[in-house]
Length: 217
Image (tube, rainbow, N blue to C red; front, side):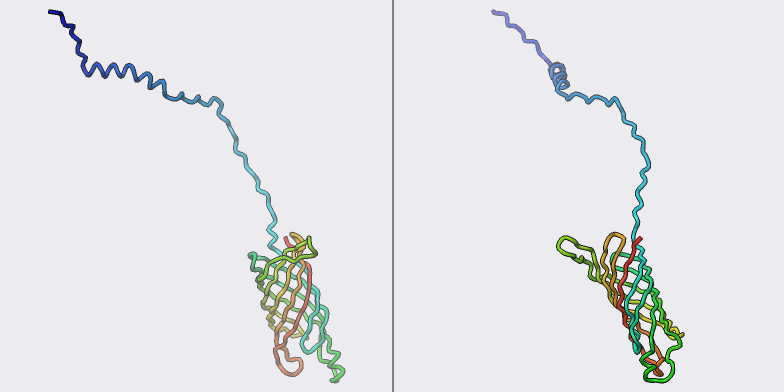
């Protein structure tokens, strides 16, 4: 009888070892190469940076000049000083001191004697303003300036004929910014205080129309 060649038996353990020997090195060869380590490490020293100090330009100082009409008397030139502070883009506070002269020439022509002991009238007040219509004013076709229409009102005191009266003022105005620091203003105010110079105590309406230039810092 022919001799049958016996096939050696390979256990499952042997197959596992063979597969590990053949496939593991190939898998390792397929791995991406490791990134090269950084050789030079930058050393950046932190330095202090001084921020520039820009002026806030919230404070305002300016001069005013115009016409003040005292009720019952004549109108005359008025001049004064303004100091203000802009709290926000909409609200600002302002203090004003101004002086004018009052003439009683008309009364002298009718009544004998002198009505006024002093022809000087001066006032001061503290007011709060609100910018209601911010916008621009166009000068020609190629020039535009920022502007705002504002309402203003406050309280103060008026010294007239050697008497001091509490005064309320209300009005409106227009501000035109000529540059970052200068502005042109036009104001119309009504100064309200009581007076008894003509023998009867009454509330007087004293109108003022003034213009001026302001400086911001």
